[in-house]
Image 1 (cartoon, rainbow, N blue to C red):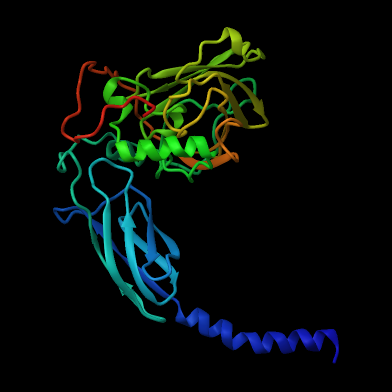
Image 2: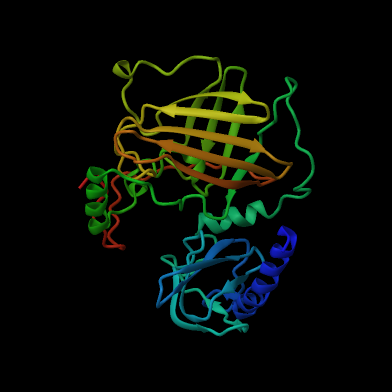
Length: 348
């Protein structure tokens, strides 16, 4: 038997098994609506199914059109988990969804109202999605500055969920503290007029990059403080012994082709967004404008004193044409009692 004949024979033997496996897979799809029956639009999010017997997961997507689809599901009984990137709705969870071999299951989802009970205009994340949807000619070429660099001007809003990232691999001491914080269930640091995340671009709020010859100012709405500086003049980071660790750290940037690279160090150990970390936290961001209406964002975070590996994350930002940032004032002294959570303090 020749080698070619052997390969053909193996393929012939495997074909029925592969065909059966493909035929055995089921699917799940449906519309996602709010508690009043209206469609949930412009809020793309992952829909996760977990096999109740094996724990295996399969993920589909809720599209901007308010419909979701999950394919390639092995037969079994599953739980559904959907959390859209908006405060308007609470998390949807359901158990006991049966998927049969080769069958397409139709299952519409009704999201329960969130903390604002569906109040129109009272959800900055939903407003951001609506603003982003106004942009026309999304795939058109982007403009460049006189020096040839991509023009990043305009108001940008993240598409989908940029905050939720893969779990950060922690060293034992850091994991112990993380477990303690999970049990406490702290309030959001923003309720105390503190930054909600160390890298503002991760938030869903409208943001803008103001490009100058020697620095870029990154501005963001609904955050305190609502700006940070990225120095583009070739300077190095300051000596750690002379730098007071801060919430946003110290950022320097440079261009690699059409990609803006931002390198940040000098964080304090309680700035949010990267779990339990030390002052050795080092973050690199990369922003590549893909078209008139889209920009790719990438993030790499490492901390040799707290992490066991580098955390990597990527997401897409969308241009919101005809939009400007508005003033945000944080009301200090506010105490969040409605959620009945412990006060935020960064460490247990």
